[in-house]
Length: 210
Image (cartoon, rainbow, N blue to C red):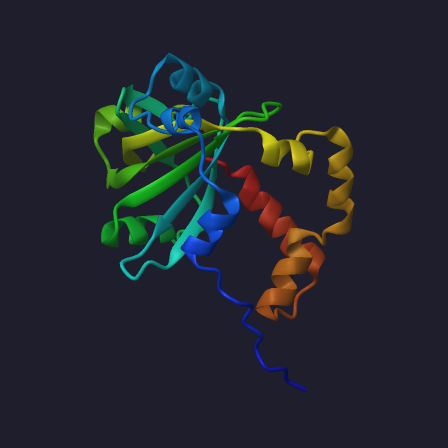
């Protein structure tokens, strides 16, 4: 049995603004940063994780995770960041998008800190040896790096992380409710394979971090 697709009512920007009101001048000023100052630099140096948003030429959006040891993202100067590209699934979705549309948005997290750092700008891939050498881990350079040209940078208040209780150890109990990656992959791909076998293969891949 099929069901007709339900599309909820679209609210216009004028309606949204009429109900939400307008931000005060202080908040506008906090969002006006366009360079990496000492506070932004310190946050990036302590961040082991970021989410990266890109979109293709048609505006189709994608958001992917990036993570490594704290400080894996390098500040080249007050308007330039470099993000290493480590071995992954080889889909290169972000690279494809940036080749068509160089706009990028980054969201940096630091464990235990409620506030997040947002960086917006443009980006492109590089294999510049001097840049890659700065990202060397266990004697191995990254194969590529993303150069981010910073246009806007600001700290976002901690309401979302506080509401989600993301850093609360008790929240980790939710992991018990999620099937293993092997079970999920076998189901979604329709594979006739023991999920435990697939799980071992996935875990072996995770161990090959670099």
